[in-house]
Amino acid sequence: ETNRDSMSGGKGRGLFEVVKNTGSTARDHLANERTFLSWARTGLAFFGASAGLFSAYSLSNQSGSHSNSSIDTNTRSWISNRTLEVV
Image (tube, one colour):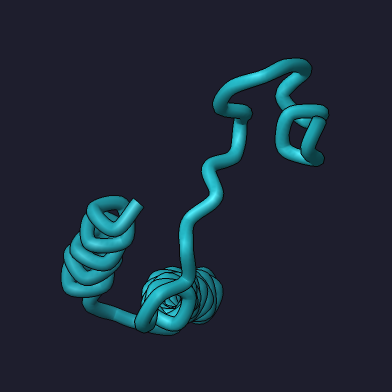
């Protein structure tokens, strides 16, 4: 009985398929994984930056120092709509 058969509980194919590492199979898989993780990290960074800018902008407008509140309200709704589109 091989190690693979003992993992599956019997003979035949187990849960894991053994793939020969010919050429660049492992290298390509790891490169794809790194690319995916870097895109995910970049997306999270953009989302975090936009949420931080939105909260800082909202806090600065709570003081009521601006006389033209319609521009601030329109800008605030535009930013919140764009932030929700990302999510």
